[in-house]
Length: 298
Image 1 (cartoon, rainbow, N blue to C red):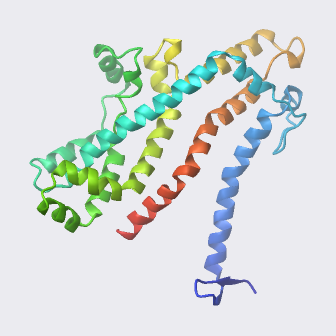
Image 2: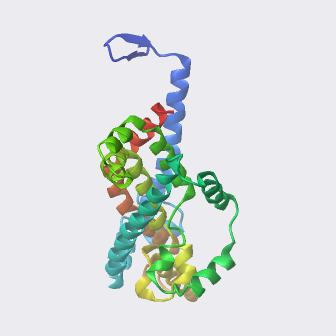
Image 3: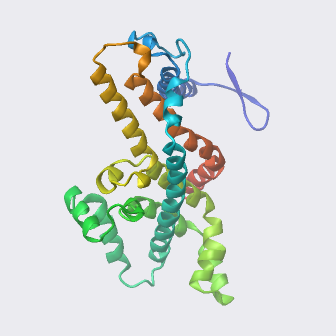
């Protein structure tokens, strides 16, 4: 009989609901892991194996030619470093604006608080659209600048509401005690609120960082200078160039003379996913704490 051990060391029976939950979680994890393993296998498989559709969850005729193709571009390392700096800068700007919007909205003494919050929430449901956004960026002179990749999405109202809720759940007695001691609102925010909100801030920072790292559409619209291309845009160019080579060859010549687009796409996905996979374990502790704290405080 299957049994579980609780914190007191006593064994208890596993009921049907526990088994169903475990099976569901395992199946859900399996659906997430299998595509990832397939992409890894595809990126390390030969052209012949991919074209013959022999690749499963394990590489066939192992080769690292796709990764050599990506790294053979001398601009790739520059683009990687530039994208990392851009992501860090974007995350910093977003968190600064999110904190500056969320903290004042927790104060009942803020005049027009309801109107401001309503106006911000309104933008979650209605927007000007793509063409007005493009015209606005162009008229502000942000075309072909880093600001076109930072300012248009500099603050997520959804993330701001999450942070505002977290701030609201903090004990008011802490802020009142600091105010009695002569601490200003800015001092309370920097010395009390932000340190206590570190799990939530780390979680939202991860959301912003992933959003910017995977961003592609804004660079396609606003950027034409190659030195300002983020990683996703650079990889898009590599894949497009290889697809053009594939169509030009038209099946003639040796298969090994080029890399099939499927393999290059898989290697590109792995190459762009690696930095996030390296960062997430560092923030996982804060991520879990932030979720659990919000759940406990209701």
